Image 1: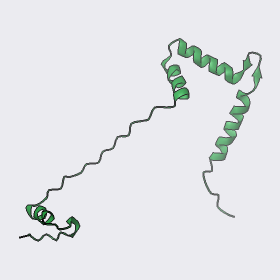
Image 2: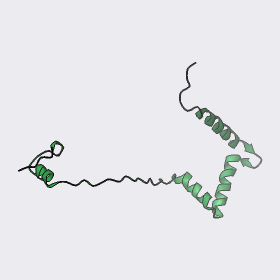
Image 3: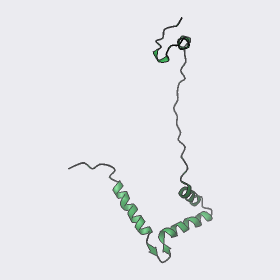
Image 4: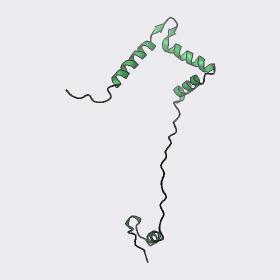
Length: 102
């Protein structure tokens, strides 16, 4: 039997999404379910609910970029007088062998 490839949970997600789309598209005595949910979201935003205002903003403008903290400490390299003289005399930095230049 061949091993399954890829994310095995993806198929479950598609089934759930398909069911949600089907249920949200159904008509009720009060109208379309998805429209009713959107109306309720707008009402909550108008009442000043911060989460509703944020959700509308995220849906219309997209979520703001999340800051990424990057901590990478580097130790500054100290350059010897001999190395600097070697480079100043026309030597290539990656060819420096540690010898002093006269």
